[in-house]
Length: 434
Image 1 (tube, rainbow, N blue to C red):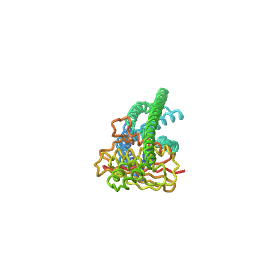
Image 2: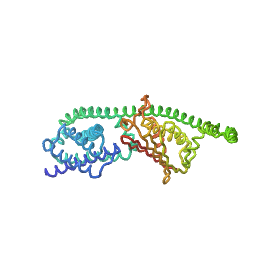
Image 3: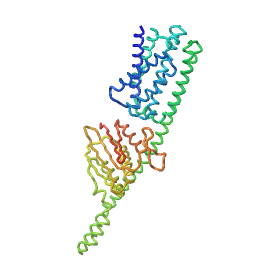
């Protein structure tokens, strides 16, 4: 019979561990080799079986499992250990341990046995085996529920990276509360214990609601600030484009006068004066000379305006583009390209003149608008979680350009990926066309 109970314990521990690795990979939006969760779940199950042979239940069991899983997550998902510890502690304390505690209370009420907690945590029995299978079924159901109804995984991932200290603190408080309740439940589940359990549950849910409310207020504030900054930058970009356009219009308007003056110099065979005059009037036409036909008039105008800025800062720009019809509104297109190129120019100009280069690649491939920007940079790239931090003096606009770009990409159901080493920064954007 002991072999049967051991097999049930092993199966329950394996299911708990395997579901845990799947759940953590889901909330971190990470993937690993398919066999890793099985291997780690197997090792973890053997470790817990060994500890259970020493003592069937221990208050430190949750702690040991949390640390083991944190190390495993750090290894297989390649995240920082503090993030691995955060999600591991949240899973084992606020999901696994909470479900087990709630299960003990519910079973006690349902079966009418006040001592069921002591029976389950101190001795091998059919009731303990049935309870273990019941709890793991609830955990599996919770995982599949989360997979189905949590649609914005990236947002959840950002919350974990940004608020990991607060989440760890909540896990510690929950752990202390669970230990306090568990000590009573192991003795006898009285009406007072049930009231304490309900109080803890209400407190836990209230903390969750307050945290969610705080995130909502903060998100609305950031969106408002982002919208304001985006409009300001958009207006500035339009003013720059209008300035270049007005400059060209004036140059074309005066074109006839320039031709008459050149005709006079050529007629009098004064080549030197003619060359000086041509050099003096050619600057307004540089944008027209540099014009690279991408196939989209709006894109042409934005790119060549930014190429003029890059030229003044002695930055080499390599452009390869072949674009068909783009369904992105001009306002979004202008904001998208202007912010990308402004960031590239700002980063590139800090390098040595012979190393300043920006590669621009744009195409429409299989009804997808693709942009790849690659530029040099000097210094180090700083990140806070998933947010890139600016090197500007005004730290209130940390990564605002990239945030605006990401906002537009998400708005049009696109995807953005960033890659970099110690010298080059590369961004790839893919936006499906209607």
